[in-house]
Structure formats: structure tokens, C-alpha cells
Image 1 (cartoon, helix red, strand yellow):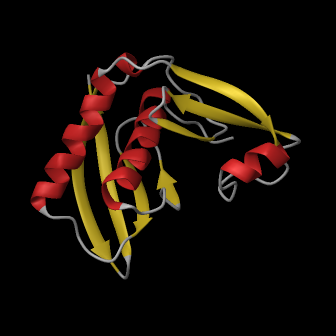
Image 2 (tube, rainbow, N blue to C red; image 1 turned 120 degrees about the vertical axis):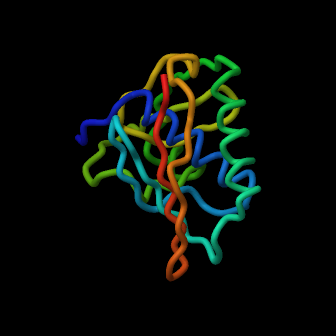
Length: 144
């Protein structure tokens, strides 16, 4: 299993759900999550405007400020496949799938560590976004 920073990893979940809600895109298809700086890649046909970048950051930080409880539940592989895309789970995950929920804001299958409450995340900061060949890359970090 990759070594993920729990704060950054939970922020990734919130970023993904915010992208889905704001732009109607799918969750990131590729990500690289590290303590200092992370990135997520989305299938997207254009760059974000400066206003969209600001709104994205504002919405993510609003969710973080809500002090939402982060929980896990387990579903059978069959139950999970009816509700979620399992494409990013590693092979051989087993008969049960862990679903991580950020209150009623986000739920998705995940194997990584997370905070117990969004109050532990810090402040989400956008480092940059670029869009090339139908891929929007979002780079971000967290401030204490």
C-alpha cells in the first residue's frame, strides 16, 4: 500500500467530490498524494478560469471548516460494485471493500489512511492547474 498522508488523502477526497459537483466530471483517474504537495488528474476539455480556481478552493475550504466526521464502512464486493467505480482499487482487494465517507459530502472506495474529522486537515491551497491533451492537472498543498 502506498504511504499516504491522512490529511492530504482526505483533502483529495474532498477535492474529487467538489470537482464532480462543480463541473460534472468524474473523480480523478490518476493522483500522486504526498505530504508537501499533491496532484490529481481529471479528464477535462479546457483549463479552469481564474474564477473557477478561486471557487474550487473556497468550496473545498468550506467543506473542511464544517468539521465533518470521516468514517469507514465495509461492503461486499458485489454491493460496492453496484454503487461505486472500483477501477482504482488494487487487484486482490478481497471480498470486502472499505468505503470512506466524509459526512454526507463524499463516499468512495479507498484503502488509504484518513483523518477522523475534517478539522484535522488544515487549509487547502491550490498550487496550480494546467490542461493539456484533455487532462486537467490540479496541484495542491495544505497549510496548517
